[in-house]
Length: 76
Image (cartoon, rainbow, N blue to C red; front, side, top):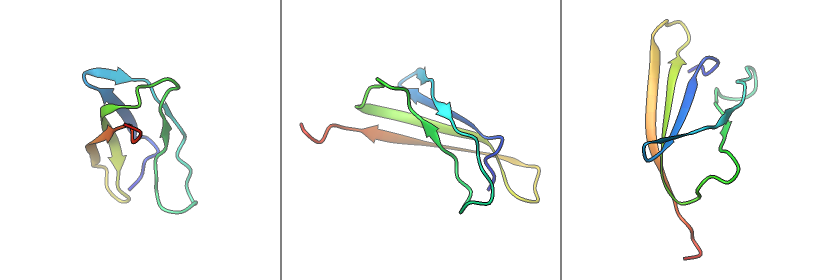
């Protein structure tokens, strides 16, 4: 998989969260994509992550992957 042109979108409910996506570097370990949540984001609740424009070596087809992450406070 390749993430050089991938787009990452994060949603908290129906609200899109502005993230900072770091540039994908090649030649260091397995292909990966890294982004950072903004300071002060809600640390509880469910977030939906959608990564689109993922490519595969030797193919022009683009892929999309979506998943949910549930954050919670362990101190409660």
